[in-house]
Image (cartoon, rainbow, N blue to C red):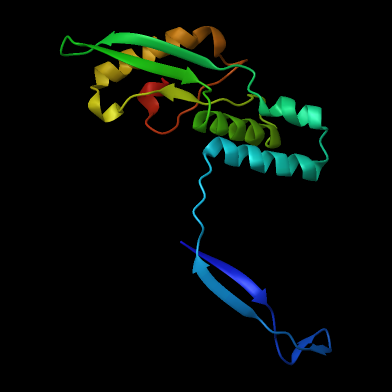
Amino acid sequence: MISIRINDFKLSNIMFHGIAFNAHVSISIEPAKKTTMNALAATNRNFKLAARLLGLDSKLEKSLLIPFREIKVEFTMLKDDGSLASFVGFRVDPDEVNALAQLVTWKTAVANIHYGGAKGGICCDPGELSIYELERLTRVFTHKIHDLIGILTDVPAPDMGTGPQAMA
């Protein structure tokens, strides 16, 4: 990755709306400085910038950055081969999932969709599970969070690793 910096700017004999002017451009290309910012930090930074541009009260801004609820469930499931496997599922989790939940919240609010916003999932590699194991896993996870999701509260939507069968 590179970083482009404009040092100065110069153009000669430019006509703009009948006015002639000269300018000079000097650009330097350098290796980009490595910075690490996780998804949550980037989302919070962007939200704070938008909040300032909108003139939001600092108390409102702070309250909008804190999730209303975070759910974490842990469970063990019988696999097709008779072994037991443990899984962790969540509905809004710190870091990347929290950032995604914030983005969904703002997206639904801007689009005037009355579902709020949340993200969640199960920590697993779906490719390592059979169709029947995925079905059992989805059912157990849904049972664990069923009191907190529903058509009038929090509507789970498909995302990476899900398809029509998991969402049915």
